[in-house]
Amino acid sequence: MRIVLLAAAAVALIPVAAFAEELIGGRLKVVSVELLAESQAVIELGNGSSGTEVLWVDCALGEWGYNGEEAGFPVKPDEKSQAIAYRACKDASNTSPLVQQPGSWH
Image (cartoon, rainbow, N blue to C red; front, top):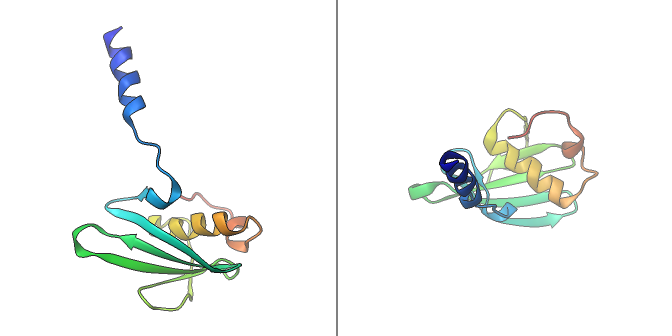
């Protein structure tokens, strides 16, 4: 009985975070999401002690880029940091081609 109660208490203590506070893998944390246009977003990521990085996403093209690099790399569902792009696009528009792509987003 104690084990069940301890397990229930542990589950209750797990924080349910909003998108902008969600931890994605390791020490990567979404700090802010700014929608620039209907299909574009800029996402600021906190990467622990070394500061922040910026992820540029073009939801219509399914592309992303880091730290000032324009979107141009295909977003792949097997990369945790790129899953942030998918989630930003999902928030921006459910009709985005990126959101329609099959895959297991982490």
